[in-house]
Image (spheres, rainbow, N blue to C red):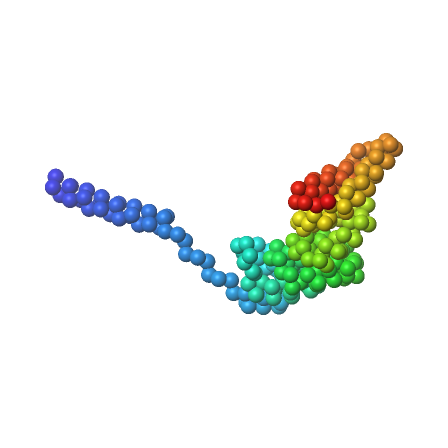
Length: 230
């Protein structure tokens, strides 16, 4: 009986030790991941002939989160500076989006130039609009004078194209009360299209996008008026 008690106590101690070890492993914070080797990543990107790999590298930047006011690491800016000039329009579109996400104002002029040259660069592949949509989205986050000027001109001439949604989203991101009049004019234009379509008896699906843009513009206008727009 005494031998049994000793054995029981021995196994109890072993089980307790294992439990404490598991508890320690579960409650101890995981070690921080190794910092990204930016130079190595940039080299891999620059030497890769695989556009999917290059795009994946750019997408991996989504794992980097910055606090308000915190700047992106220099290697991120260097990487995107190379990527925005890539031969693949898909890679360029992702790069443009990341420039806006990291608010890299140093590439503001490059984005405006890219928008204007997208058709020449990628028209043959049919990717002009994809690149331009990404550029407008990014410029909306940068909110520079040049960005606002470009968006202003495009919105003024837009008749309810697919680009309209990206332009309105950019203006929403600008959050600039100076755009109230432009939004009012755009809404009026969309409303006139909808009114004419309804008078003709068109199928609602044919003018649903213009109706949606009118409502979107009105919502942004209300938000800007609340900030003091006139």
